[in-house]
Amino acid sequence: MYKIASFEKVSENEYYGAFDMNVDHPADYGEIKLPQRATKGSAGYDFYSTVDFSLLPGETIKIPTGIRAKIDEGWVLMLYPRSGLGFKYRLQLNNTVGIIDSDYYYSDNQGHIYIKITNCTNENKVLNIKKGEAFAQGVFTPFGVTKDDYVSTQRNGGFGSTDNK
Image (spheres, rainbow, N blue to C red):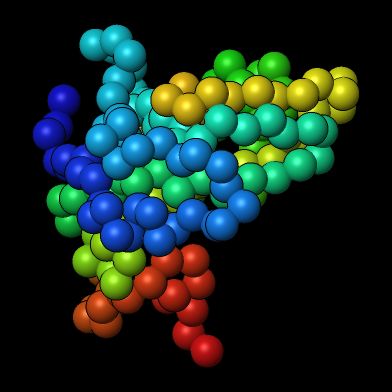
């Protein structure tokens, strides 16, 4: 196994500033759980909800995790729903797979990882997640680039921040 990353909390200001005024009782900053593997053979690091929530069929929520990842160059963190929740509720990330690049850590928002999910059940099931419960997982994966790749620009943002417009 390669040791190529570490998880940290974002600052308290970044964490609390990420919540919509409509969210009741996000986890206290001290209650934020860093992602961890459940067993020694697990590939995925569980991400824990910072709020209690219920999702009716077709509903979506965006969760500020309070987490950032410092990742060695040449690696990426890929986010997915927890397997059991995907199987039971067809729980899906809205971007299908979350991609956390190594340079996201240095963004203005401190590389704060948000996870936006939708309950896509076709069996009319309501998803209930409690604060502190695992609902997503992240897997570190190496990646390569083309031989003629000489990109030198720096990221400063999250979704869509690297579009060439």
